[in-house]
Image 1 (cartoon, rainbow, N blue to C red):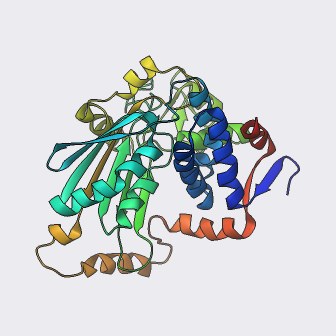
Image 2 (tube, rainbow, N blue to C red):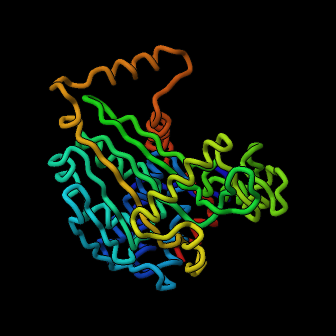
Length: 334
């Protein structure tokens, strides 16, 4: 292993993250909730959302922007709408607080919306949709960020990377889940490429003058591009509307106008929509035709189900541990 890296086991990941968060101002409940999603990311080889994010978490706690002792409040805004005031905390504590109540609401109504506001989302989206699919529910979620992505045809950042996640439960085994930015590449991955001195693929972004480039530093100074041209740009716009105006929360551009730029996320909303298949099916069958679809996909050589890559990486991490730059370790331990 290179001398400039450190190898940790998964227990060490959670211990390290939780200690840093509590040192920066989190109470035990908030630190535990955040450290768990950091641990989940590292467990599945998703380094851009794991320990890499801890310094940003801590900076926003130390600056006072984020409430490290948040106690989210729940309110039934309508029969099928659960409103969640995040109490200016990070979203993992909001998810932990709302999850059982929301799952019960989905089962009662067949379909329900969770509107999370006054919160700071700095993690992957798949943990919360998988929390719901593990309860037999179909779920989707989206959230915005500060401007990083230019609208199709434009040169200046306007949208966040605006991810959308979806999870489908299965009778046996892991759910089928995807979590993907509407940008060609997640911003955290571009930042890691910059840190490691590696170029990004063509089509990821443009420099400050609007010229295509694969230099991650120039893209971070310029703008990212949506995947699929105008199609990804339209999805980014949809996420802006669902996670912002629909919930009475910030657009990405508004989040930037009020943010402290302390290295952590800006305040915003999260849109979660979930369905109970037991209520949406006209018949009481098991829904096995979904399994037929998955089987037909896997019959084709080279095809894998969304989320399978994380499961493969999970086994590799369990065997080899989590490898992070020594500089990141030192930064977290401060």
